[in-house]
Length: 75
Image 1 (cartoon, rainbow, N blue to C red):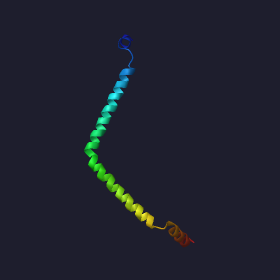
Image 2: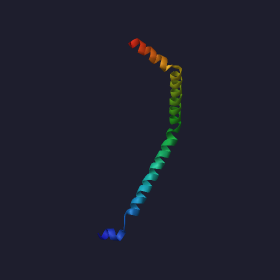
Image 3: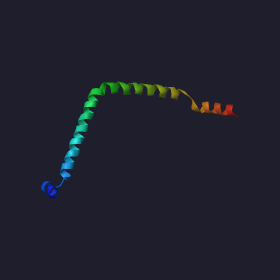
Image 4: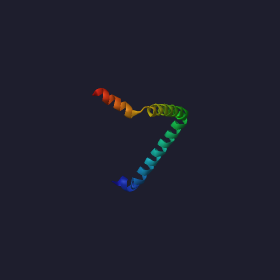
């Protein structure tokens, strides 16, 4: 009990500890972004191109006529 009175509240210390931890996490994220940045850019670029390709293929398909044909076959 005397220690707590001597050093006071831990609220300020806890806040500083969390602030230091958040700063460390920010530094690690920034370093990872610098290290992996080009690889991630290529990965997301390739994924975007594939998505556009799939979208173009889907846009070409007439789903209503395809569904109508499937319904006629099932009768």
